[in-house]
Amino acid sequence: MRVFIGYVSLSGNTEKMAVNIKNRMMAVGCEVYMERLDTVEVDTLKDFDLSFIGLYTWDQEELPYEANEFYEELVQADPQGVKVALFGAGDWSQPRPCGAIDIVSNKMKSCGFAVYDRVLKIDQEAPAPDRIRQCEDFADRALSWGSKRKKWRFFIWNRMQNNPKYQRTAYLLRRALDDYPIK
Ligand SMILES: Cc1cc2nc3c(=O)[nH]c(=O)nc-3n(C[C@H](O)[C@H](O)[C@H](O)COP(=O)(O)O)c2cc1C
Image (cartoon, rainbow, N blue to C red; front, side):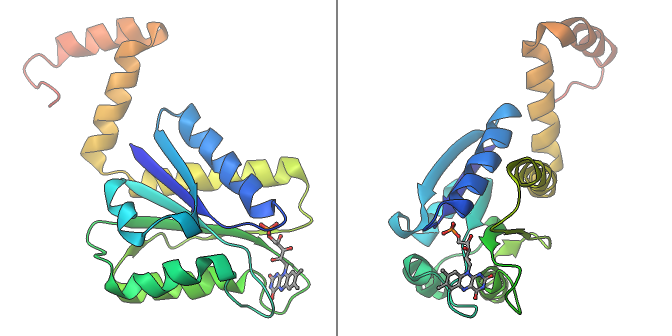
């Protein structure tokens, strides 16, 4: 699986989330590319099986200024086959914490992108272990949502064959499935 993580962050909270998601995706064998959102074009997302978009929220549910261009480009982009999961940090004392995530999520849905129904919003004060646990859990769930069944099965199969721990199981499976080869 090729995974893209695009984020904007001023004081570092959303960036930490992006790094936690990146580490998790790499640990399960994904190829991960991470960039700041203001340096990429929306059509870049087409090159990936799954994209994570991270944003902080500013000034009563405003988009961060670094995300404006990305947001404006959404209407012209080709959303076909693009799968996106959104995350970000905010302030739980605000009436609608992390409002920018909802703004981008709604816009992407209305433009025809496949947007994961769950979003990950984390309070700026969240302790690191909580943040890491939530990011990893979100990354796992988004990955299983974003994986095409066949592709995911093939990915697990490849990992099993390359991992000494599963080599015997893979060998037995291969023999048992001789009549029904995994393609
Ligand atoms: C001037 C200012 C306005 C903010 N407005 C909001 C807001 O409307 N909603 C919200 O959830 N968080 C708001 N925040 C909190 C930030 O989103 C929060 O600090 C977040 O962790 C910043 O992300 P970053 O560390 O990735 O830059 C505001 C913070 C500042 C300094």
